[in-house]
Length: 170
Image (cartoon, rainbow, N blue to C red; front, side):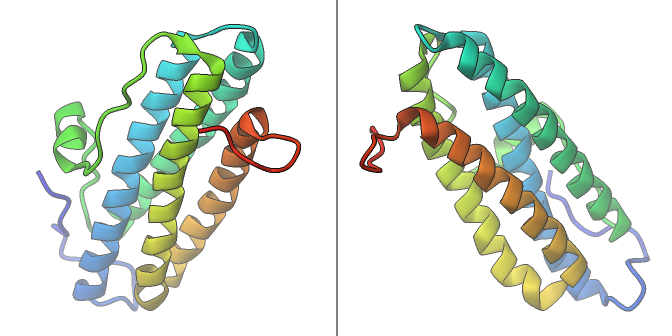
């Protein structure tokens, strides 16, 4: 099920073609953030080891913030005349990356893997910005604000796996 523009309206001053292209960009970001939210909670439940509590407690605020981001994107899609589709099968069908592969694992292993997840999400948010800058400044601004917060979350993760010389464990 794709997320196409179905309403006869969109935001005033925006044409249907721009709305459709914006919706497509936002839909891709919504799918990524729903996946990220679930991955963060999965890690929260399955992290073990000496740094367990620090990582466990670091992740819940990230889950809540990413859930809020997802809601904001879904509502923007609806505002532009689209249909935000967030059912589990539709999310899996629309994503272009593999599922998170670690189950129960040490904090270090989860954080190294989570850093890679953030590389994908944040890199794709930046790619979406390039397109949104030409299509819809409101959606662009929304994604810029989200990216600032997502990059800070990645910094929190990296602080756990960074050496004193600035190298990341991999």
